[in-house]
Structures are given as C-alpha cells and as structure tokens.
Image (cartoon, rainbow, N blue to C red; front, side, top):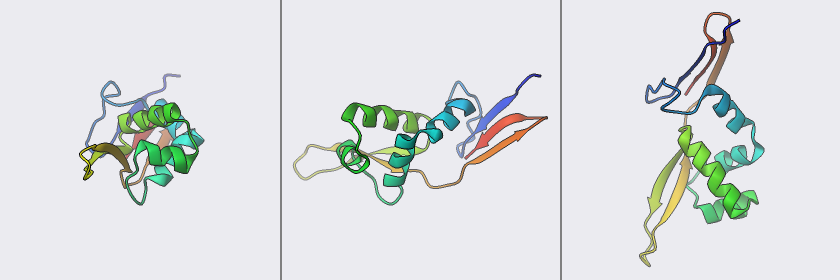
Length: 112
C-alpha cells in the first residue's frame, strides 16, 4: 500500500522539500527535550542560555533542538536588543494548533 504524506502549515507551505516531512515533525514533537523548549517559550521568548538553564540542556543540545523547531516552523527566531550592544537571538513558540490526520485516502497529513 502506498502511503501518501502531506504537510501544510499556516503559511501554506505544502512541499516537504520546503519544510520538514510529517515524520520529522512527529519525531520532533515526540522528543521530550523539544517539547520542554516549546513549553518554556510558550509564554515569553527565551535565549539559548535561558533554555539551557530552564530545560536543563547542554548548550549544543539546545542549539540543535531549537534549530529543528525553527526549521519545522514551531519556533520564531527574534533579536533581543540589549543596552550593552550585545544583541542576542531569542526564540518564541508560534501559537496555534497542530492537526494530525491519518486516513486511507490521503495517508498522513499534518496541518498547523
């Protein structure tokens, strides 16, 4: 049986080459460290250093997980302007919902 996978986000991107595949999205969401980052950034943007402390991650792991979440469109990257001139990247969860559909006609589909 052929499995058809579709992926569509709020920006209307449906080509998996432009975004991660549905299987990658599910894998990222299944990861407890990625979910911790999403929870930490749900109410206010956080820097990598803040995520390291709050989520108890190594710096390398935090960067890797944040990059994956930005790539699939679940985190926004912003610039935090600091008075000392040393601006830093900060990350905020994109609000919304994720719908996962699995059926015989369309296969696996993820929309957000």
